[in-house]
Image 1 (cartoon, rainbow, N blue to C red):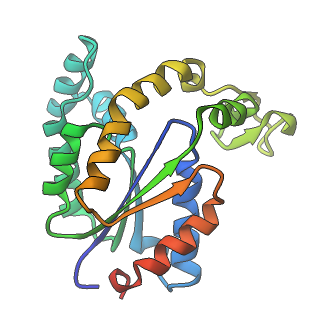
Image 2 (cartoon, rainbow, N blue to C red):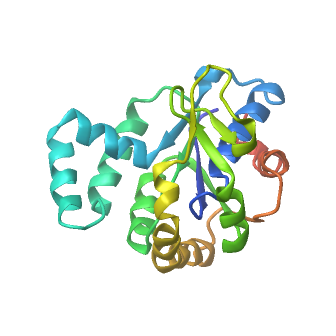
Length: 218
């Protein structure tokens, strides 16, 4: 591969982006011969939390902005990602949760200008999301995802609701207001854009998407 391949995963909260990411990694390793070291999955939300926790200069800027009720500025997120992309030796970068706004779409264009890139959008109905979330839990000890019917994690940890699930209606409203317009912007600008229904299986999405982008995997 002469260029890194950046895959952006976009979808509503709890739409299964994490499962698609893990399916992409599985197909890349089993079918296309990549090693786990060749692939990295990047959560923008986790990056922001890490910077704030570390109290870096960037983290302090982010914390101050978010304390006032604002989202992390697009320019700062783009700076974080640009620096990270340069440092990473991986060949395939799976980006979860970016771009999320129309402003970030413009930054996204700059971010991936020197790489091969594609966008996966999973369009999941709100009622399906709410049904999925109703029964999902995570292990308080190890963080593994479970169904409520599992009772207990294999590590012995107690199953609890995810904190962000408790504010899911607010998160879904923010998604409809801010992220949906960004999705339309990406589609209209003729990016390498792939739209999948929310009922599509994660592994089917991964296989179909990678088959269509095999030229970037050589």
